[in-house]
Image (tube, rainbow, N blue to C red; front, side, top):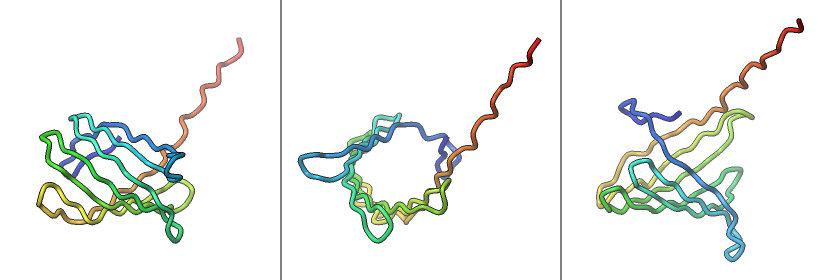
Length: 111
């Protein structure tokens, strides 16, 4: 589960797929509030760079650049730059994604 700067839970989906016509990865984000965005992916020096454009729930255009890089097998860091909502520039942000630990296996006792 992800949270914003105020601690509120963020919910939505992020789909990533291969665009066979353009020969590149593309992605689509759908937020629980109704906002959405799409992105075009490119590999660059051990990272992925994603140019995102979208629309807020109120129709305000938004854009950003995301750079994803691995920090070990269980952690991905996303640096978000060039953030623009309407005509307002937003500060850079960093998102850290960590794979949750595996749930313990339940072993039934033999009777």
